[in-house]
Length: 284
Image 1 (cartoon, rainbow, N blue to C red):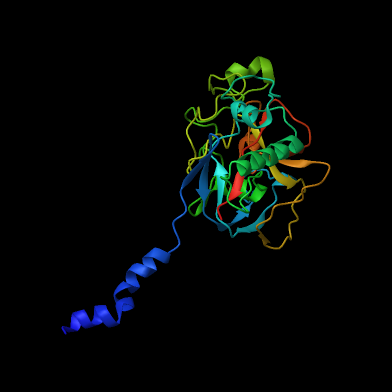
Image 2: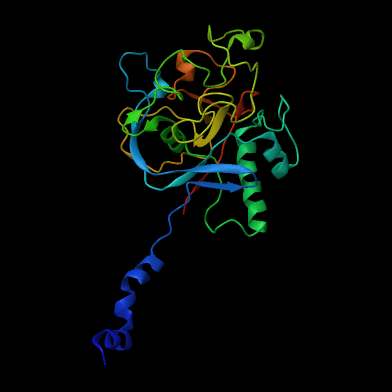
């Protein structure tokens, strides 16, 4: 019997070692997922300094630096939740400025959490939600990581480091908003008096839109001022209860440098007509 035939007959497992390994290899997670018209982008984990460390600008107390490590890959919404998606899930539209592709606004933190729960139930009933992968509000750390960390650099603004922006890059309080907001970013014109359809402006380095404007966004965390001596926080989700909850990102109603940089933090509990949210989910 030829030696090659002997190997195939007696030791077939030897001939499939490499192919068997390929078959059992962990499949690559998709870069983008979509459910009910909501598109989400994959964000790989990492460690970063969340907050404001630059010494050439005035640092607000709420912008204190703390070290954060994100250990789990997650998906973050490419856009703020639109009114059309909200209506599909919740059956109503609380927004002050109506438009199917405008971001939903005028929702409280609790209402945005209720949306996530309703979305999970809707998806689960159609058997498309993998076990344990529930949609939720992003943590503040996840939001900040996706917005700021660009390779080895930390972005100052959603569009980069220049202020005011040298091109039309986001929806903030521009010249057309003067009669609504009472204050504007002088010389800037994005042509939207209030909110704009999601995705109207270029995406950031991760393919995420409107991280620095359009509507500000609820995140998962209860609001607190970071301690200057805080230890490394690993996958912080923050408290789900409290008097106030954290808000991140600029909006069509904001124009000051401190309000538009990515370290800006606000808090509240009630809805506003310049406040919405996007959703997140662990990848596995």
